[in-house]
Amino acid sequence: MSKTVIITGASKGIGAATAILFAQKGYNVVLNYNNSAAAALLLQKSLCEQGHNVIAYKANVANKLEVDLMIKEAIYRFGSVDILINNAGISRSSLFTDISEFDWDEMMNVNLKGVFNCCQAALPEMIKNKSGKIINISSMWGVTGASCEVHYSAAKAGVIGLTKALAKEVAPSGVTVNAIAPGIIDTSMNAEISVEDLADFVNDVPLGRMGTADEVAQLCFFLASDSADYITGQVIGQNGGYVI
Image 1: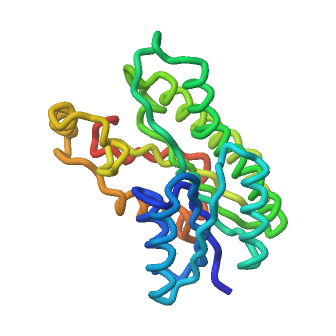
Image 2: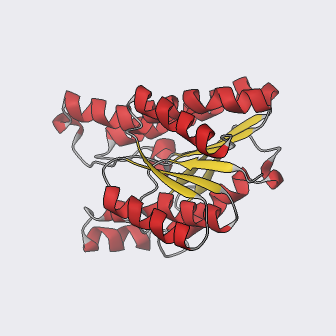
């Protein structure tokens, strides 16, 4: 029986690239989205037309009930949840003094509470099966912090802390938990950065370019594979040498 992967925020960028890769490798894919219905449904249609087992499912990861229902649907449709990739996230740039309480709560709810909700919903199935892989997408700013992105950095640092602690807790049940901390990746999330600022940023990357969504997807696939069975609680930087 094919394994099942749930990928949050899978309508575009890293999530979409990851969904495509896992589908092509024969996995059942639950393609989660919240606001980007058109992109998610188009991706689902394309992958299904290629003969892959993919469902698109709308759920706000910050809403526990919606997440619980998504996990139940995945188990109903495919029989199990083997891999969870927590990719859904938002990014905002703002001076710390300009961050409102709403801005802070929104960032934490999506980027950190969303990971909590999805892990808590998926883990009972994984623990029951004595097998599972959880991969959390953090950020290099969760490691180093970013000026004018304090709330984003704090949320992504929280994802790292959650990853390390949860890895210790569920390891005896055969479940691994790891995080990827990407650097600047060529996705629409960078749309608010000016061309000049983006060029300056890339000039500081030792490898001299942005990363691609496909490269992050490949790392997700490795961490989900049997080859990574002895890797847990780790934060893997994928930033072209920007943070070493």
